[in-house]
Amino acid sequence: MWYMKEESNKHSARLLTPLEENFGLNPKIALAVVLCSAVLLASTVFWFFYSAPPTTITITSGPEGSSFETNAIQYAKILARNGVTLKILPSEGSTENLERLNDRSTKVDVGFVLVGPASDNTNGNLMSLGSISYQPLLIFYRSEAPISLLSEMKGKRLAIGAEGSGARSLALALLALNGIGTNDATNLLDLDATAAANGLLDGTVDAVFLMGDSASPQIMKRLLLTPDIRLFNFAQADGYTRRIAYLNKLEIPMGSIDFGKNIPPQDVYLVGPTVELLARPDLHPALSDLLLEAAQEVHGGAKLLQRKGEFPAPLAYNFRISPDANRFYKSGKKILYRSLPFWLASLVNRVLVSFVPLIVVAVPLVRSIPALYKWRIRLLIFRRYRALLSLERESLTPMAAEQRSRMLHRLDEIEQAVNKMRVPASFADQFYSLRGHIDFVRARLGVGDASPAAKEAGH
Image 1 (cartoon, rainbow, N blue to C red):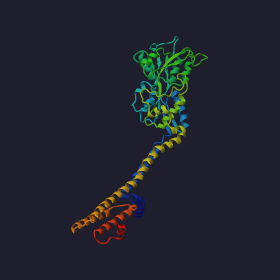
Image 2 (image 1 turned 45 degrees about the horizontal axis):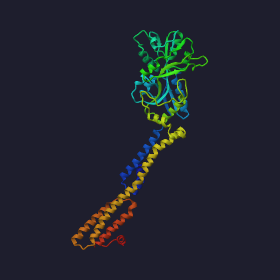
Image 3 (image 1 turned 30 degrees about the horizontal axis):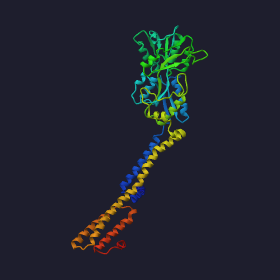
Image 4 (image 1 turned 90 degrees about the vertical axis):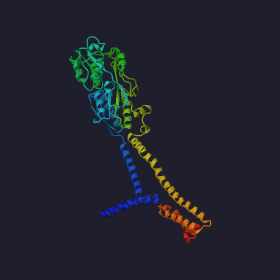
């Protein structure tokens, strides 16, 4: 045991001796310098690994077959090209997605959320990466004659969507504006998209409210092509968009779904919010760029309800656009990520962020230590020389014995102060030269013979 302790002391001595010899630091200060340097380096290395973007993130999407899930699958394929795994967590729709994002115990990073009343229920810590698409509300109904007003659906069996879906939240808001709710004869059914569509087809439901967050395109297309089922035309679309700020007026031009069969047979107006891609505030900037790049690829083209390049866009309702998303919309990806593969750009970026500042700060600081210490030692030596020169000038004039005695006492004080000085080996020549000059001045005062070093200094 004692042998190991002795070896450890030897290693410590080897490490600290250069600091003591070159910088003149005492063992405690030298040890503190070593420990501080080690902590600084360890912190830099820790930050280098800690700041690396995760290779796996989780998105809360929507029910199976919904447009939310379809979009998430496309995102996952695009992120996989850059070595990032996107886990898809199914949900009941927009409302549940928002609840998951607000709940820190749920391990999700991003999610699709419909702008609307559901998004008012938030803790305020979420950020928006922007709007990625319009999401129209499609109301299918059975009727011999077209229905032009929502109020005409009072007293009917209405499938407004399952709990947690954005369709249900918007349906309730629109029905409330028309005086339709739970206090009248209207039967509001909390059915999912599949059950609602089947109910409409078999006659057990009079109308269904569907949105892409909870219904698949196949279900919507099936209802559109069924002869006895009509798509509700929002003749009052302008009024709804003025009363409900988050709604947009959307148009399906005549025949645009099927030109051969002229579906729809006339222009159809719809209302609907936008879909925001929400994220938690700790989403890594590099992943924010990847997600927005995926959004551009998935949502950037021309579609039935939007023009090319219209989405994604820095449009938000209840959530502020994240600084990283703002930067992406203004100037695109960071320059490293534009020209290098994602993994290499991430590596280079972390080196620049972690180690370059350390080098920029630490190298000049370390280089300044010898200069500062040399200046300090020279200052101490020059201070003794000033006292010595003053004493020598006084010795050139005739003096009484009492005055000589006082001068010798001052010289002894100077010599004692010099002997107590702690200087590194690099200042040995100046230190011994100072001691020689003390002997020289002592000889000038007529006390003893100057040492050979003093005589040489005197010449």
